[in-house]
Structure formats: structure tokens, C-alpha cells
Image (cartoon, helix red, strand yellow):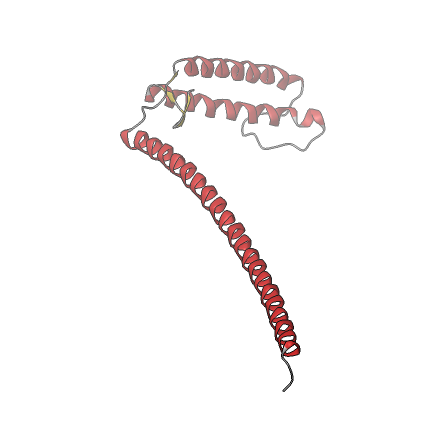
Length: 169
């Protein structure tokens, strides 16, 4: 087996695969037969086995034979499996291009994230600057209003003093 980007794969001859498949089916049938032969000895209901008897003194030899046959079938399956070998499927041009595009997309996403962060920072600075401008304008207006009030009061005082200083005719 080979774990690659395209998954796990084994390579072998088709006739070897078919023989392995046949041996697995034989092993499955033998395992079922063994289960059916041992059920009565375990106090379980019998299962139908055409032409076979339940486990008793006469069936013990058959049980041993079935177990031996199953062991031999499994050994043959192991030898068939040894005929297969691991391989990684070649990466096609489309898969290679897709990987390149995924890398490019990741790079572009990183750049976009950086630019979004810079844009948010700039927007925050603009808000801060606008608040500073507004508070400076309010300060200047309040200072001009005070100055205007002081000058008006001074003019009123000067006018009053000027009228008091004039002789009455």
C-alpha cells in the first residue's frame, strides 16, 4: 500500500487478484461451516449444513479437517497478497496544476488579509483624526466665542466710560 496524495494503492496481476478473491470466498464458506458445526456444542440452535452432521464424536474429525483447510486457505491468501506491491499513482498535470493553484490561492488570501488589516488600521486612524479635528474645531469655536464676549464687554465698558467723560452741555 502507498499513501500518497491520490490515496492508497496496490498493484498486482488480475489473475492473482481473482485467485485471492476465490480463496477468500472459500475461507468465508469454511468459517461459516465451522460456526455451524460448533453451535450445538455451545448450546445454540443448529444451522443448516447440507450433507454435514452436527458436532459430536463423529463430527470432531470433520471439524478438525475444516479448521485445517481454513488455515491452508488463509496461508494461500497470504502468499497471494505477497504477490501485490505498493505503488503511488503518478500525479497528473491537472493535479500538479491544482496544487499550484491552491498555493497561489493561499498566497493571495494571505496578501488579502494583510491588505484588509492595513485598510482597517487606516480607517481607524482616519476616525481618530476626524475626532481630533472635531474636538479642535470645538475648542477654537469656544475660544473665539469667549474672545468675542470679552471684546463686546470691553467695547461696552469703553462706550460707557466715553459717555461719562463727555461734558454735559
